[in-house]
Image 1 (cartoon, rainbow, N blue to C red):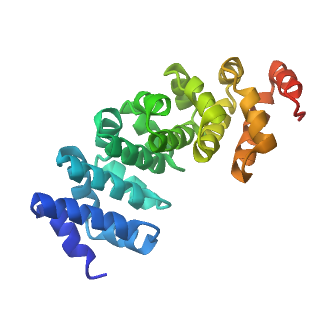
Image 2: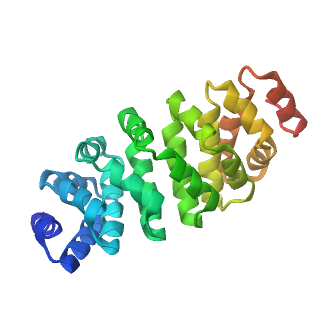
Amino acid sequence: EGGIAPLVALVRDGTDSQKENAAGALGHLADGNDANRIAIAQEGGIAPLVALVWDGTDDQKENAAKALGRLAHDNDANRIAIAQEGGIAPLVALVRDGTDDQKENAAKALGRLAHDNDANRIAIAQEGGIAPLVALVRDGTDDQKENAAKALGRLAHDNDANRIAIAQEGGIAPLVALVRDGTDDQKENAAKALGRLAHDNDANRIAIAQEGGIAPLVALVRDGTFWQKVNAAEALGRLADDNDANRIAIAQEGWSL
């Protein structure tokens, strides 16, 4: 544990190369290790990482965004602390205007900040995070699409204002396209996102059907991986909830509820 405090000090006060490398090291220490996630926060590591995302070089921003995403993974105290330190706005800015690697890392970080944290879901939307995430789902690299689809699904979870906003920003069509033509992870994440968009929102149920979402979801239930099947079945159930036209369409696609 003795190595964390000096790394935090380098992120705060080092030269450019020291900041870049120390941010990268903290990200590696936080990866899959909750004791280290806690220790980095306790040593004051979150604030200087947020500062790098705001004002660092391109490589510093990339490493700091990755580190913040790893600190937020399965750690709600860190999710709260990152938001309190002002971390959401610069991550949204990276998703919008960053390099490809910055966009990828920032989208993953926002998805982790939104996980099981409604205050962060609201804050990400208020900072304008939904539109650039939709743009990544539509036009990003494979990893950007995967991360942005997961982030949109988490933003839509138990938050109807975000469900509405994602639809208004044009998010449904590119998510349907990922379910149809994406990689395995993209299909899994996009199916989950569509299910969350359809939950308790009939306008979205109608829109997903109109965008052609039912057929590729049925195809995933039939032929997908385990988690694709789970997510697609959940999505179809939500599309059929209180919507007779969708029930009929799902049955006609060869899968009856």
